[in-house]
Length: 89
Image 1 (cartoon, rainbow, N blue to C red):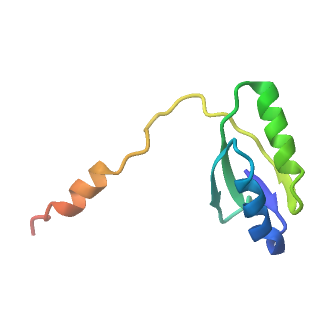
Image 2 (cartoon, rainbow, N blue to C red):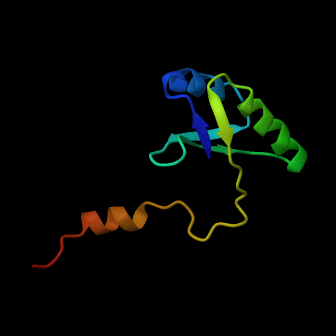
């Protein structure tokens, strides 16, 4: 997760889009401002990518967490099926 200077949020987003390893950026409410998902080959590569993110003007700090495994993969079918099926009254 990443904390940024709010008035530089748009510029930070543009800068993040220029880093090829950045897969997705989501705005958050709460303690952190952004959730940035990246792809890294190994720990050294992650260190390099984190450094590139920290070098962006407006980025205050980052906190790195590693995905060890998926417990529930991204899905939408159960929700669509639930909405498409009328509920009995």
